[in-house]
Length: 116
Image 1: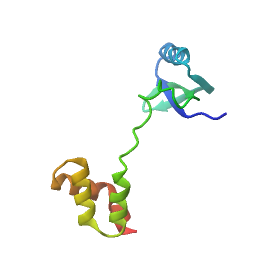
Image 2: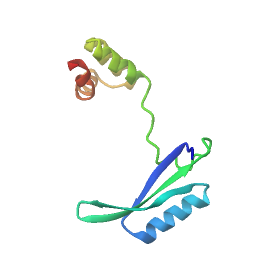
Image 3: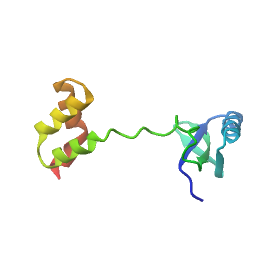
């Protein structure tokens, strides 16, 4: 079965999970697999995987992680090439933030590339 978007609906109350899953089914989604149970901390949660097969259907849009901006790939490439100043400047300009914030972001998120 091919699907475009999916999410795991997670609730600690089985009735709430059932309501959410039925709500999504009424909007064109389909459940796949069986009901799951997961232990997080001291609590048990029920979950159900829900899919949407139509790429134009955006009912799960709020569940889908946003694609990162394209310029981050370029920032990472520059770091890997050891062009840190260029990477920080690019991130600063594209993200619209200050130099110190851009430097901190690059150091936090890209320095593993610099070391390899």
